[in-house]
Length: 465
Image (cartoon, rainbow, N blue to C red; front, side, top):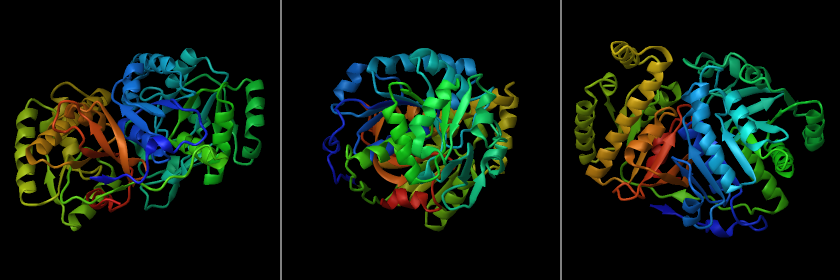
């Protein structure tokens, strides 16, 4: 199903063997983003759904990175702390040089939900670093940090927006980003002093970090505007890793480290991995992002058949019947030779969203409790649907969308871990899933965040690249 043009365990020239990095992603699709950045640099990385033991990691052979796909972006602070402490303790036993709390590159968070500040506090308590490096910009994802302020596109085809003016993130229903300065935004979530190495200071980044630590800064944000900046940031973080082994931020960290290692010759640039085309795919979409809606529209033009789902039925006592009916409907379309997208919403104005909220209100669920319940119930329903379709049809490639739902989709499919196979869009690689004892073991699935990818994303998953 895919063409491997390199042997992953032979690409590291000078770095010592063994684990280089362990990470926890605050949502599922963001976790695959980190795996992609390392794997396609020749550093084999495996993403788990639960914290791995040293024995589990050893069974995989030569692995340079391990991750845990998490859910803290949708959790209140106390619940997130209970989730993170055992993960950090497990990573401490792995003794990796870098431990990364991976956030979204749009840094969406708040004091009440998805608190990055609480993750910083817990990490400092466990690892006791001299300072916490913070990197948000990731140029490959069209995310930039300049003088502490973040700028982002809305999908890979759009213009650039300052984060507090972003058409999606500024009006996010749970964590609206009304502040673009990361220092100001994060200061609402932690009392720790936050310093900045701005874009004009990156040539002397290590010295600037020393100065900021002397001034009492416990968190240091690095500007990142260009690929050249990545090298400088990667150098500062790697060379001072004994002082700051616990790092917070986007996959810009991994891109920065790889850029520095490639410049020093410790990692060799690798040929691109490619995925072969397949005849059909099935997609289950749990995203209401306008970017995903446009991608669904584009796929329909390309011949994909759309299957609207009874979204409200996914969150009440009809779920099993609704899902089983959907399995039959999707399988019938697949039997006609079609690629199918089964979706719970087409953009933020889809009337099914309001219908679903009403169904939850009738169960006494409102506000953030309703939103978290929606993510889990819809995610598990979509996972049940995808598992049933793949088992019934024998298809071996699929996709799912939605950062909040993807974790539950994978869990319901029986997935325990995954590896990146080939790039589809920055941040959403095609993955081979580990599902021991299941027909789904070895299937290829891409887990796409709502804001990720170009218009032709689903066509790319079908035909490979």
